[in-house]
Image (cartoon, rainbow, N blue to C red; front, side):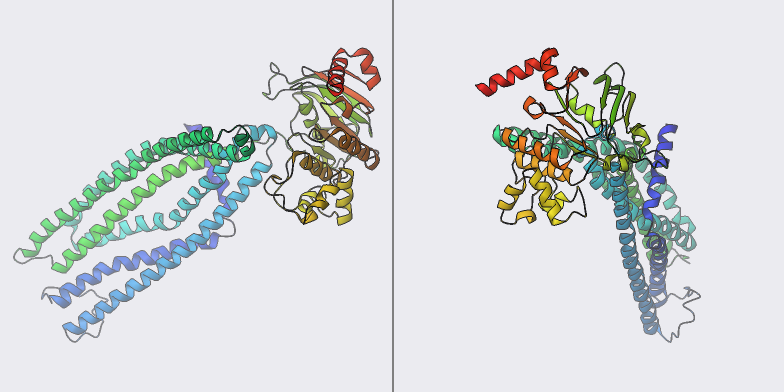
Length: 603
């Protein structure tokens, strides 16, 4: 329990910097609320004066000290003066409230903007292993809905959490000044509402927590369906996906209903308490008004009724706010998980190392996605890749080829052993320097919404038109790009949805070329192009990236057979390393793959 509280305190502290730039609005809002409440509390007092001193003109009524200074000549003038003060107080209270609403909106929206930026920046610092701990849909939900919940509660903290306690205290003080005996009714109402709030908070938090998880599940179903829309349609699984979504939506609906039942139950209970207080006050107050030598005037009873409503309404509003806090606490915990997640890959302090040659050494490297020596993906990898060398990597599916190259730019860190580039452990390089020197074209090619030109400039933001076209020519992409009506201004849509798989691969290779890397990694990046185009791309890379260390992962031996050396992977280990001719002589795995591919080609 103590550890949980400490985490929550750390999470709240992490939110404080997000108020920067909007603190003036946050400070002004409570001051405006104080003005609004003070004027609102004055109105019942003026109403009592209007009723007793003007309408009924009670002989025993004593004017408030500030009213005695008014130039009052008769009842009509008194009513006009006091009525005018009530209108003025109402207008000023309304003005203060409107200004407070604006300043609180500015402060809360600015806070939400900073918080989203902080969360997104935090996610960008995560390694692949960190991101693997969260679902993508959950991260989206935390950056949107959970932030919205915190934004709303922050706005309410600035206004309602100032207004309700202040209103309750001032209205109670005024009520006790008028008649302490009748004001004791509030003393009995407050514990009842407090008990009700405690019950709601305890049952509310768990319900809201589950409800947010159901949101994650539904968002995940939507996201997965949209990303895999082509697969869904090709397998005619629309009905299955609709049914799956309906299940998650229905499940979410049930938990939303369970959560909202708290509000549905709270309102009538609070209204019962409020109207009970009103009836008791009317009964007891009415008896005091009509008794001989009454010390309580009609106007006093009227103002007591108003103060009673203000006190109980404030309690009701406070209870709603606290129930809202229970929902926000669930959102805070989810955002706090992102803040407390420690990136397991960080840059060393003050590293000024640079990569000049691109020599790579794997020295007895072990790796595990589970971070466990009992469940290794790569085992005792020893490999020396000379600077400027072209190395091919082949092996069956799941043998660790992609994992091997992802360790070079530290997308993951080794479990044991070291990887050295130009004689230095990759963990000694600044992450920006390291990754800037390595270009990767991954198995899952990704293009971003925007034009082709915009996507190319991911490789080099300052690239000229000619440099972009030259990179695309090397990657055999310029021809098909120029066939588009808008050429390099063609909008690719989300994820490059309006280009084919082979075109997407070639654009990604061109983008990597523009980076001018010391190390180029092609992870099965020509699988969707024909053999002739594959050969032209490899030839272009040899000519344009002479001196660049190149690693080519491929399923086709034809894609790597002209490499300086070829690495054969088997069950997470290196089975053999050599040229095509050497491997044909001594590697049974290599010969078997070669023979099967030749047979397919001949067929």
